[in-house]
Image (cartoon, rainbow, N blue to C red):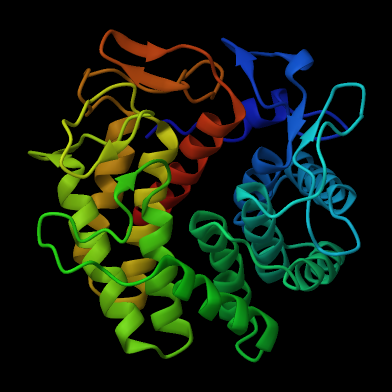
Length: 332
């Protein structure tokens, strides 16, 4: 299988961080950087067991960005202009959760000890905070889960993971819509994944059962025959018609992540079927029969429309591609 590698991630990065948007494969500098995407970049860079020198430098760059974004309370700013001026105040929205995910992953598994150490300091500071948003808590909980796998005695991570599972909540007693929210938006599988992780790592059997139940339903809802047909950017609501486009690569990557976690937690290899379908989605087994990445640049396309891919290759979609293909390598 041809691999995208990290070519396009390198192309979108400079010595400050990771550019959010691109026109085709060219970075759109005037849109600047965001903590959300830099954190995602740190996740995939830190997952690599044998990073190249260039990828190791990206980890350092992304970690420096996140520590610069963090304020003394543990909250994070999100948007930095190309002029290196912040456009917002520190907060605990989804970007806080993403930052915690990136920091937890780096603290747990980055190959550079100084990165692990500094990421742990920033994660511990960030863990003083909690978010009012379930999705932000889920992202932060996934960072806590990564850290707990590497350091089972880390009480700060265990507490954050438990609080994240509580924020997500339990399934609703409705077989047609057990999801604990009346809508599906983006990266939905992360909410089920954090329940599974809390069940595995905190010994909470009910949380594990709830997470597997929600993930099973979510996978079925986003599968058509033997291929994925995922929630589009407009989302799906309970008791409302479900549109098919524009589908987002982040939803596919979140399913791959969650099902890989479910396979690890349960020892059941059948969860890898969805991981393989996620890989296949990028290779053209989708509702438009369109390959969803540029084999020349290594960039992921920004969305699947009814007419084919959106050919822009921004950070979020490229990282979704890289993340999914990291799982593909483990399956090979």
